[in-house]
Amino acid sequence: MVTQQGPTGKMHEGNSSPEKEQNMSWQIINEILGLAATDEQFAQELFTDPVDTVMKRGYHLTPTEQEAFRCSTSETLDKFSQNLLYHLSYKSESLGKKSAPSSE
Image (cartoon, rainbow, N blue to C red; front, side, top):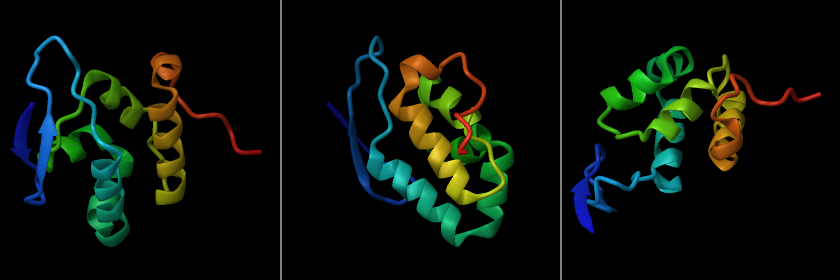
């Protein structure tokens, strides 16, 4: 295990094995969503270009997480969060999908 300092100064443990994808923790996902809730500019950037916005803040995304973030674009934080949760929870099934199921 490797311990790394995250963008907020918190230490995060990760597997140093290059063969294994290092998944983002739910704590970090909540940190990103919390930042979007309190920073209007960050939220707008997150809604339009989520992968670039998150990576500019120093977060590492696996290819699977990048796809989940890309598929989660929305105009509101509620919908973005809902889409992200869907895609991260069902990432193996959602890799080829471009949008979350409609909320009817």
